[in-house]
Length: 235
Ligand SMILES: *Cc1c(COP(=O)(O)O)cnc(C)c1O
Image 1 (cartoon, rainbow, N blue to C red):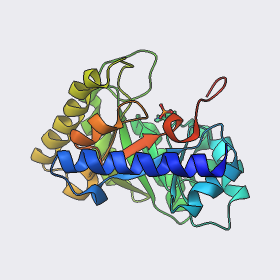
Image 2 (cartoon, rainbow, N blue to C red):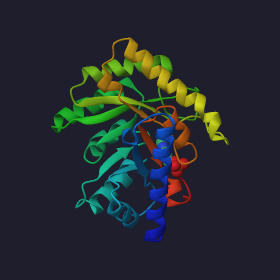
Image 3 (cartoon, rainbow, N blue to C red):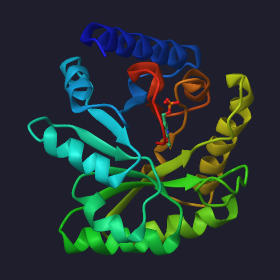
């Protein structure tokens, strides 16, 4: 992709995020944009870094590893968005600063143990499957408290909040109730006494619905296509 096109798209996404935040009476600085670079080359990432973009998202450990290796001169923050297999935890921790997709207690504890072994802490989010979609990862809402407790008991992980990949809908407005429900789940955990800093982040909203997500309280939006263009093949 031509550098100037990429930069222009990034700029326009940033403006739309800021507008959505203001509409909701929120500080635009309270929303982090993760540029989802899966399938796109390191040259594109370098271009966006030149415009001040530091947060990048990948779905696969291997792909994230390869890109981070090619960009090790840049102070980037790598976000793992895709499902993490337990045999790839160690490799994931070599690269990713935040794992958005933790949906299982055993996985949470393994991430914590492995992080302690290699002497670091990793930020984690609990991925919630609000609609109970069989094809998607994510913990059932009633399992979230167990995951939160497992995270709070694990030294190597720093729980930061919740992540949602809602059912695909044509009209972004139809995603709004799911975003609102994730916020409500966060609020109910807070009311149960889960510490506020463990619930600070709501990772929700993608290319077609990030503005609605911001209006509903997203603190992290994950935008791929609207910045990089369409992806080909399996991601
Ligand atoms: C691919 C992906 C995104 C980005 O999706 P776009 O529609 O390209 O913005 C966000 N979150 C997750 C979990 C993804 O897998």
